[in-house]
Image 1 (tube, helix red, strand yellow):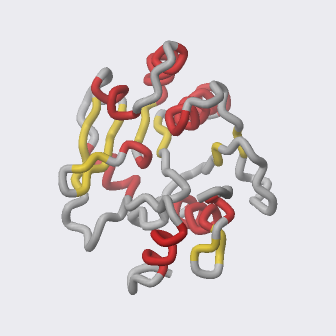
Image 2 (cartoon, rainbow, N blue to C red):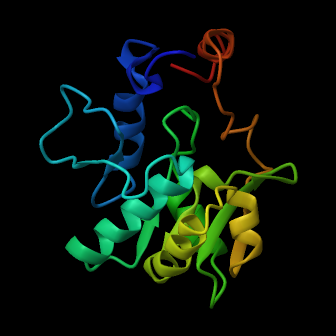
Image 3 (cartoon, rainbow, N blue to C red):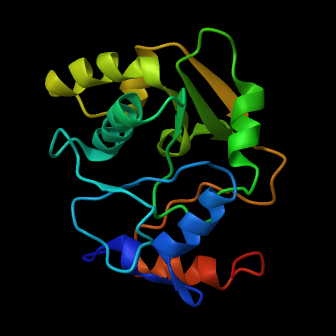
Length: 181
């Protein structure tokens, strides 16, 4: 969109604030992976720069996993892209229910389409993900093919809750939907 998506308006708040509200109701700790400091975020929300630059969404996931390993005893990291404002209020609970023993990642699926940017990642995946990124790989689906993962179906939802907003037109169109703010 040519600007920092996190700062775009979603209803009467910024996208980042909307997502923070959704995630804080589901998670004990929320982190923001950003390469640009976002003003006016609560001091309790760490803002992290990617440990491997130019790695795309997987770079943010790795940064979060490595933060988890260093500063938390939590086993899991829930990742959500800031431009997916329709995530379900029960995303975390649904992903946990879908987890299968031995899986390092739980990925939501809507109508046979995987949405890996909004996944649940086990901390044990960090070293494998680091090697993958250090080898120059960037594709999320290819990484998922290389690691054990579970799928969580969200087909019972009214519309794709993981729709990704990439243009101002998509943003405006989603805000005009009755189930949006």
